[in-house]
Image: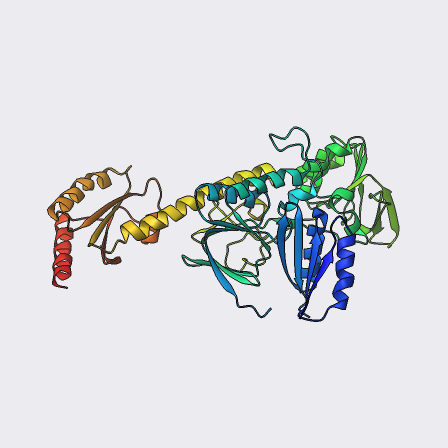
Length: 75
Length: 418
C-alpha cells in the first residue's frame, strides 16, 4: 500500500481529472492517490469521478483555495 | 484502510455546504453550538455553477456564485464551524443522539440539518457534459435569462416549469424554441400556461422531438433535435439551451427515514422541522416554492435558530423537568386557557405545602409544545409527577388537587423510606 502525490497545482480543467485518471491506472488496489489542486473547477469533477468509480474519497483543504483530494483505490 | 474508525461528538451536524447549509452552520455556531458541516466536494453548492448572480441582495456587481459562497464559508469559519470535505455514507436520525458515518469517522450529534440540495435532471444526450452550466446549457431562467437578451434559446420540456420559464425567457430572448416530446398541441403543463404559450409570438414549438446531440466549439451553438416519428435530425442554432425536465433532490441517504413528497423532496414545517425530532432541513432539498440563494439563506437561518432552541429545550428537559434530586411535579398548561390558569393557584398551594421537598415546574405550551411532546402529553392541563428522573404518574384533564397531594404524600413517604 503506497501513497502517490499528484501535483496539479496551477492546472485548470480538464487537466487534473485526466492526469488523475491516468495515474490511477498505474496504482494497485489499496493504494492512495493524493491529487493536489487549486482550481475550484477540479473540485467539482475529480471527487465526483472518483466516487462514481466506487473509490473512497476525502478532501482536505490545505490552504485557502488549495485542496488535496485523497482517493483510495478500492478495486 | 486499516485505521480504526474514530468517533467525534458535535451539537449540530449540517450535511451539505451550499448557501442553505452554510447559513444554518453560521447561525448554529453563533449560538455557541459545536457545529460541523459536511460537504462532499466544493463548498458553495449549486451557486458555484453560476457565473453572474444578479438577484442576491447586497451584491450589486454581479459576482460569480462562488464569490458569494466563499464569503459565507469564510464567515462560517470565523464563527468556528468545522468543515469536513467528504461524503456522508449513511445516517441514523432517530433517537436523541444521531449518527453520521463517513468512511473514516463516525460522528454523533444532537441535531442534524439536512441541506444536501439537488441536481437538475439532464437529457443524457451526446456531448451534454461539455456544455453544462456556464457553457450554454442552463437550468435556471431566473439566473440566465438576462444574458440572453436579443438571442435565440432552446427550451427542453413542456411541464409547468418549462413553459412558465420559457415565457419568462421571451421577455429577454428574441426567439424561444421549445422541444416537446408529445404530438402537436399536447403539453404536460397546466392549460392556462399552455394557451398563453401557444399565443406567444416569440415562442415556437418542435413537436414529437427529443434531444439527440449538443454541438459547438467552446460554447454551445447548436442543439440537434430528433423527430421521434421519423428519426430525422433537426439542427437548431441557438445561443443557450434551457433544460426543464425535472430536478432530483439528493435524498438518497435519508429516504428510508424521512418523510418525502412523491417527487422526493423533504417535507418540513415553517420551522424547518422534519418528521423526526432534532432533524431539520433547509434549501433546495426541501419541498418549497422558489429555489434561490436568497431563499436558501432564509431557510438556513431558520434551521440554525431552530436547532439552538431544540437543544436548549432538550437540556431543560433533562436537567430541570427530569431532575433526579427530588420528586418533581410538572404542570403543563396553556396560558390562553382560563381553567389552566386558575389551577396555577392550586399548584402554588401544593408547592408551599411540600416546602422544598418537591421541585415544581410550570410549562406553558402556548409558546412551545416541545416539552409536552417529549412527555407525550397532548391534552392540557396536565400534571406529571416524577421520581428520580422518571415519570411516576400522569394526571390529565380533570385535575384534583387533593388527589395530587395524596399521590405526592405517597411518593414522599416512599422516598423517605429508601
